[in-house]
Image (cartoon, rainbow, N blue to C red; front, side):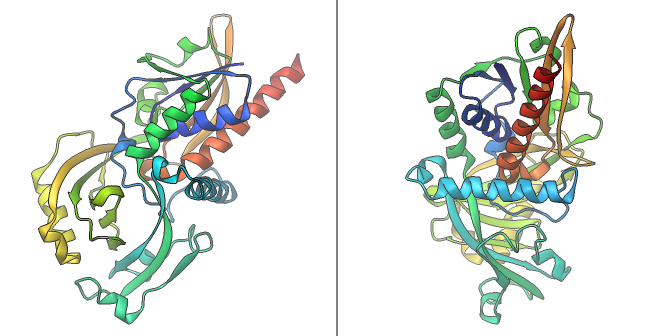
Length: 336
């Protein structure tokens, strides 16, 4: 079988890794317009998923999240964990708006620790917070994970090709299976009007003394990564395609984070970044269909629209997408 994966971000590469593991004799190629500048590179990478995150059903959504956590946790337990950028991390979520803000419908029964913050822990940060939770979860640094995934793919014989596509149908003449992991690009390639950009801006600072993450509500976050780098965020601008840095947003992010954890005032700025998260208004799209181009036919499986949770749930949706592809392939063979 000849397989094409379209998309070089965390969803595309993780889907390719799943395919490489499942289809040992397949000829696999990953197509992307750019492998080094994707929205995945901007992501903070913490495994925290909003209760609003949704797949087609609640059971499928739970399956995606569980499979994703287990995938990253399995990597964390290997000797390659530091190369892949996967580690365990603990921290706090504080809020005044609602007790629901510091809870997580999807995570409380999944991660090893999820409990109410103690009175002493409330004093770790500034602000008179009403509600607080402490949890231990996972962190995936995509600036390590993505190169690691590409190396794994190439070691397994998968080809990585720079190519900008005008349509997915143009691949049907040469490929049996096409996996559409184009994220925001699917708005054009699939004419998907449910897909909108969710603009995010973050600041990367050098603050090696920060070892735990902190949230103040959910729009202010401080997330340590490898090598003393800490991500400060953030913003969520709905239906905004502007990728230029906004100095006003930078100022607001820095003020909120510095207030929450005052020691950050002495942290030096390393980089400021903007990314467009591919948010789908109904739910994440993981669906299979058949596609034609003239007399050529191929199986097309969509896997996009993860919003701000692409890093978190890419392994789960990838596993599900591969299963859909295998089921449709078996159906095609049975008809023959």
